[in-house]
Length: 55
Image (cartoon, rainbow, N blue to C red; front, side):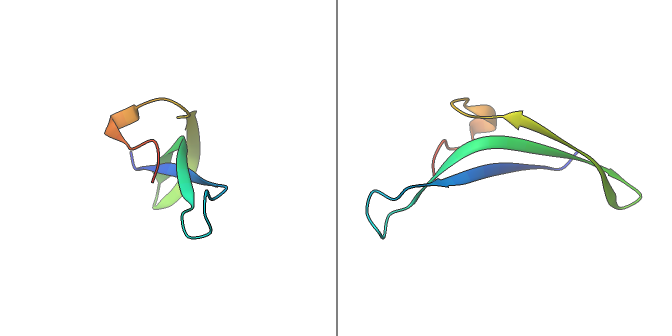
């Protein structure tokens, strides 16, 4: 099933340096080419699938 890592922008330490933190993993269930279901998993402070905790 396709999935997406969701990152949330956190307040910038400096105006040119925003930080994005991993907060969820969304898994899509596709039926007949359309999204039938979306399941979200909390990814805060969890090293899932080798995803970086920040971008």
